[in-house]
Image 1 (spheres, rainbow, N blue to C red):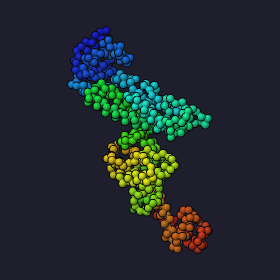
Image 2 (cartoon, one colour):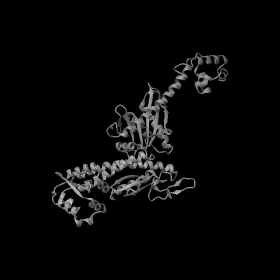
Image 3 (cartoon, one colour):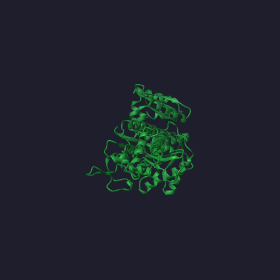
Image 4 (tube, rainbow, N blue to C red):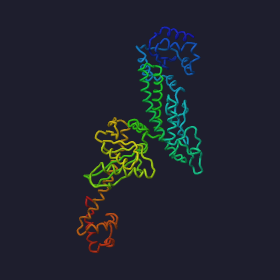
Length: 493
């Protein structure tokens, strides 16, 4: 009773000015920080009997814990909002955290312990086994996003009732709904888990996108002096920031969630993509002084090399040194084939080069009459991202995870192209030794290589085996065998 009277006496002495108040428990610990347009009016509302029935259960619990309070007077309400934010971050009061996590905001819960994890809406964190996204203050937007994700990734929401099939697979829905059009309805648990991973990466990217939106709306509300709205948005920002930090810790402890989600989300934001680029392909042209011109294409799935999808190309349409024509040829060959086979195009195409190479890639799509997915160039000198449209070139921070992922993709394409180039050169150098064999013309040289397949097999062949080749007699076979033995340790070999 004495404590309550003491608090009411302190309230009467408060000024009717803006400021911040810090509620303390009996041990002197700060348990709540709030802001006020008028300190006396705001703080007194906690201790007025007539208002207690209007308080939520958590607010009533908070009031029961208050043993003392302090106030800090400021000049304006915007200053109070900024100070409140700084003190909450500094002290991390218990009831600020609990109230932020209150039932006002929806979250998405994915229980990764389930055989077929579903994406559910919740307002309460039920366990530590699940991955949570949010909280999000706009429930209608979140519901629309989940509906979009079901169509895009073929995932299960809370209304689904999958059926186990005799062969160990699962039928996700009773019928092939429009929401999963383009996705198999009968899958293994492992195949479905890949969809979950992609959807989690997408939702993680959306979380970062919405966080930036909330920050902008909070700033705008404060500038318009809508301070209650700004404070509500500020709470949502704090809650979402905390969730994203927890998500990063979750990813370290649960390897089923990809570690490259941050990089993919960063690329989505930087390049203004509809979703994180789960599947990316990069092209590189390799040649030396216009000879041995080849191209490589590497494929990254979920930010990691997918070597089964790597491809390499010999340039067929011309001879010489023209990177633009070479790029147009290989891009056209790659995606004409995917289009004719009805296979999906990647989410992002990266071209090793500048605007000329990117334009050549666009020209290839026009020639095959296929709508291209997002295409960018990565110019190596300053690691500049080049767009095919009116957007200005973009330079990301060297520490940006999205840029670092693009660099890994480009460097892998470069390595793969150079490896192919080196293989072709080595083969050509070996075969060119036969050019130096006196009396061996083009016809018999071709006959030897056709018969033995490689120069190494010809080297190890006996004289009798060499004479089996049409046009090669015993005497010339002995001379050829002696010639090859003499050149077996040639460094150029």
